[in-house]
Image 1 (cartoon, rainbow, N blue to C red):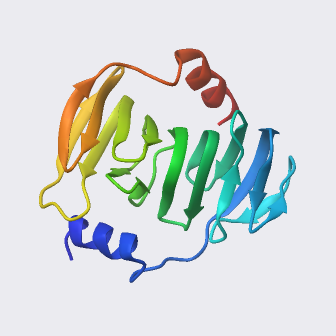
Image 2: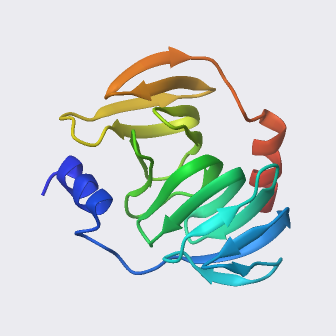
Length: 182
């Protein structure tokens, strides 16, 4: 089965992997899962919707590495993917043995270990590849773009089309702070 078909199945819910194990490393603001408030050190099952209130930030440890979630944000996760419905996330991942992806309504970014930032917006997705490699695709569209960058290459993805952009919503200092904790 090709990557695009697997991504489409995952987005539709037809292929559902085991739930993710997520540790709350730090939290500022209201972070909840399944309606329950989450605190530092708590382990959560990513299959319940995780919500972060507006203005909040949460550093989360997944099997793949660390993510900095900025609210308002909402996601679910399994071992192979994080479905970001709204909000933004900066991820610093270690070298992975299998593909992992962040899915938004407008795009799928698949990786094997890299640093990137994603914002799920109402009609589009912003992706900045800070360093490493990504495979970018859009639900309902054929084709996968394999991209590489050494320092901040960004796009806005809307209706399957990628438009170059500039670095937005994250900083090199945030990346360095996550890498120091990895």
